[in-house]
Length: 123
Image 1 (cartoon, rainbow, N blue to C red):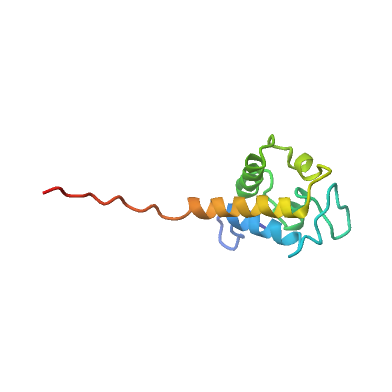
Image 2: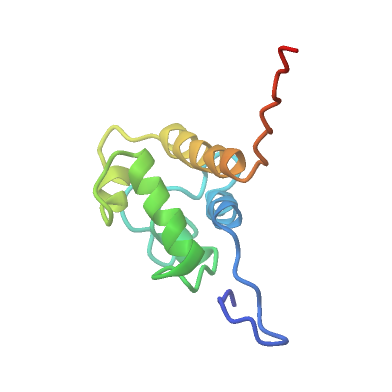
């Protein structure tokens, strides 16, 4: 279980990047587990169901929620409308994978230390 609880023995909350990586992995390497619409009990699932399949228990808050909001922002859809974005008739797994990869990459950039500006001396 993933929680924000910091008590000894409690599971540590995943980072946004880890949540995105886990949900992308649910789809399978070639998208064989991705589907438009709700996958139900079969192995296939949509972009939203992937969060549950990846056992992101803190989907309503914390890094699960942050990951979901990031995907919505990058997809240029209203928060809570990722399922509508996923279910568009012409949507392909390549689109889904590209969105997840952009989100993961944006996490990597934001977590990199910034370079210090060097002062140039004109003495």
